[in-house]
Length: 291
Image: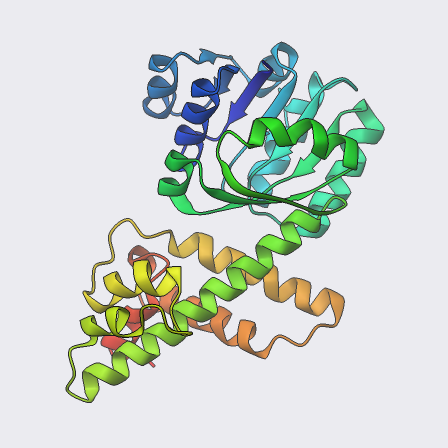
């Protein structure tokens, strides 16, 4: 089995490490937060002292961190992955970041060190990571993808090679556009039902198996109707992702009126004090009559 390094031990990363260990891989982790590192060590992972040390010790480095700046620092910063990268190693980035930065940095890493890069953002949340059912959208060279795929299979229910570097991130931008638009229209529909004097909690069951049904409706919609804002994504993450999608729309000359509206709603959510309401916080905007 492969020697795998993993950086980014948050809600997604820890269960992904667990799945890799369960699949028999030799896993080394690095993280700044001891409380996040310890469960991985208890499960059998090894610990590296820096991203550079981790890269030197493994064949494949996987990262799953918050944003574009965090990826750049891990790869090209002091004691970063590029310091010990070589042509026989591979980087797999599960973070959700800007597609153009991904393409630029993959070219830079390959030119400077020979190390390949596969962008492979994920969708499915912590529960999907635990169950091994994540949707993974990948971008990179065919050979690099073929090398990474058997390892990613440890936590993927659907793995798709979308094209060259940046293609995985572009597909993830589409994923976030669709989720954001669904959350927005579900919030609008639930608020309408409530104002019409109907128990909005009944809507997910009412629409189940019909064409308006979706995973977002059944999971997010139920919690939105109950005003339960705990543990559902992160407002910052969704805002960041909508910003990326809308910027890519401008870069490519693609009309995105719906995505731009959803972006403005998440920006309003942050501006109105809803930063702690998570991905489904748009419901809170309607409930608070902030629109």
